[in-house]
Image 1 (spheres, rainbow, N blue to C red):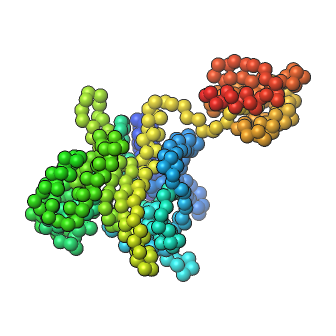
Image 2 (image 1 turned 45 degrees about the vertical axis):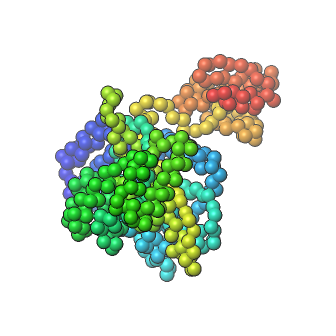
Image 3 (image 1 turned 90 degrees about the horizontal axis):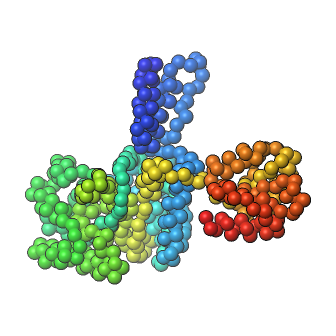
Length: 465
């Protein structure tokens, strides 16, 4: 049972975090702990106690956060559409057998649902396996699709703080990795589990990864050391050529195929003029079992200060690769459908933008309202409603205050607070003259507009903003 001293101490922790502008997730976690402690303090006997908080690993998004979130989605969707992508959707849960055995060691992170009528179900872990099931079920062999939806993992995510400057792409190929494991002496049966260890190199130093390989997964120290020599290599076309001449790798069929495709990829990247943002990185593994060829991640860089130190990686914001065998796992005849894709980490990108907005104190608009219909005198509610109805019918985004006789000053202040750029003011004189007074909130400029010209004037002015 929490006592009052402990509650006061926890409240001080929350206060300090807010004062230091700590991570929203960290603050939410400590607030939830505080609320739980308060709930256990006394109260009416027999009365049901509950804590108002979101489940662990989740959060609410208020209007300001959603405005930032929509900005992220708009940029991503515009890019997808620019390249001719179509959109699909699939159920939030799948048959458990659909998801089982597709994610390697990450399978333990899948949420299973209780049997509710004869079917064993699980919440989707990603959007790739459901997509492969969709392709096989509908016998689709050619589609360029995008899919934006929530996925669920029993994970404990951590968000790295820092000032983010740019990102670059890391690429590798599963065939190169498998060839590398073979020439280093990794038994076939350990390829996937050792690949999962290598995948942790962006979060753990090599020594810890090596200890996991040897101590937990039973790999020989000699094989681990040989892997260590390769996974420290990264570069571009020069590294590809170097590995093609490697006495061991060049004799391995899988590695040779992967290096050939990697060379072709870099030739294409050269045509696009983006090789400066791409690193061929032999430590990139991607833990999921279904990858069969090229794999890649977009990695953010954090610069510690402005004195020219080298940027360091702070984490992946997107990742994906080729998975040519996944659809065939669902096809009755085992037909292979070549697939390649990328998943974008919306939550991490959103957290970064949220931090950036807070640091810059940028004012975020949470609505798209173009104009507020206001009145200058009392008893003009009906006239306001008539005008706003005309604007809505014309497709103008308009609001009106839900008061019978609001003060003009309060109406103007509402526009200041919410970022509405224009005010359409109706008054007794304006009604007699057949005009509406249009006020620009930022400059306080006012101009009388003929009522029949108001819609066009609002469109013209808001298009300039």
